[in-house]
Structures are given as structure tokens and as C-alpha cells.
Picture 1 (cartoon, rainbow, N blue to C red):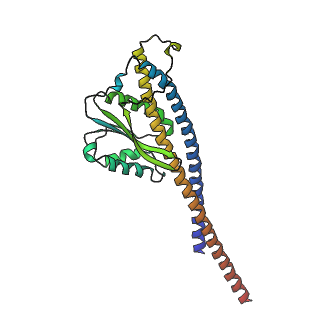
Picture 2 (cartoon, helix red, strand yellow):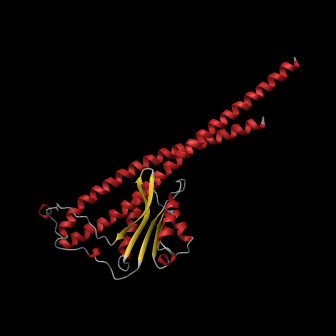
Picture 3 (cartoon, rainbow, N blue to C red):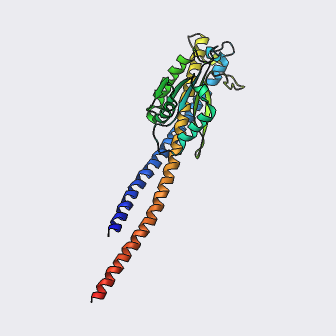
Length: 277
């Protein structure tokens, strides 16, 4: 009897866990779809600004394209805020350990985004420049704005600002990458440059070029954060989908065992009753 009660309690707890993992799977898929549309809109906005910037650069060149003389490097490491996303963080941390030696990280300026990234870098006894531990989908834009201000402050005495994050190569494949945030030298100007006669602004063309260039840096940072969040939601969906399937298989086997034990107990009681008569 005690074995049946114990099995029934386990079946009930696994059923609750299955409902939770299924709900998290649906939330991850919904968040991934929203982020994908957001990244696509950012890309379209960037493609609209690039021809204008390229046309302005025919006469003026933004100051950010000129690299500084300093040899200092800054790293922006984007991890996840929460767990339950498989080996999403382990992929990035293994890539960092293979790519960045302690001799590179020690003199560098490090900014972490996400609680997991902060915990990983603290284990290396590094002094962090900034930490953004509330990395959620609702706070992507505010964190991007803070990172943009950090880039503006660091670009004065840093030669490079590099971002390390997980890139969603496909929905089922996340790949750790590093992209240069500053200096941005490859604008990928198309052959068709926008005619500036169609636009009118009271400011000087150099100021307009500077403002557009800064806006592109901000869009680039926001796109990196959104792509990292997309990869995290994909990894979480895969992890929760696997957990849901495992819970369902475990429930089937436990329910079968429960039915067998229950039937054996009923058969035993019937045999005892018939023998007494």
C-alpha cells in the first residue's frame, strides 16, 4: 500500500513539472518570434540609414572611424539572466576560455550583461567596469542605451570594443561569436547611394553624419543584445521541450507500473477473500 501511495505522489509531482516545462516552452517560442521580428525591423532600419551615411561620407568622414592610439581593449560579454537553457552559457564560457587568455583579460575593460556572465567573470577575479544583471526581454532597450553611453565613454581611450555573445545560427544551433562594436569601419555601402537633394536639414552635414553614425552604433548594440536573447530563448525552448518529452515518457512508465501494482493488489485481495469462503 505504501508503494502505491509513493508512486501516486511521484506521478502527481511529475505531472506538475510537465505542465511547468510545457508553459515555459510556449513562452520561449512566443518570445523568440517577437525578437525575430524586432531584429528584422532593426536590420531594415539600418539598411535605410546606410545609403544616407554613405552619401554624406563622400564629403565628410565620421570621427569614430578613426582609431585611437591607445592599445586598450574593452569586452562586452552577454550571457543569460536565468538558467534552464541547456548549455547556452557553457558554450559561450568555453569559447571565452579558449579565445581570451588571462593575459588579455587582466588589462582589459570588461562589461558583463546577464547574471550568469557576471558570475563567470567574477570567478576569474577580474575587476568589472559595469554589470547589467537584470537582462530580460523588457529591459533590452534600456540596457542598450546604457551600453551605448559606455561605448561613447570608452572609445576615447580604447582601441577596440569587442562584444562576445551567442549568435542564433539556426533555431536549433547557437554559435558563440565576437563582433567589433568600435571602431566600425565596414559600412557596406551599396552601389546606389541616396541623393541628398531629397533631404533637407538645417545642421551641418558633418553633424548629421556624426548623429547617423552614433545611431548606427546604438542599433548595432541593440541588435547584438536581441540576437543573444533570441539564442537564449531557442536554447530554453529546446531544453524545455526535451524536459517535457522526458516527463511524458516517465509518466507513461510510472503509470504502467502503478496499474500493475494496483492490479496485483486487487488480485491478491480477491484470492484471500475467495480462500476464506
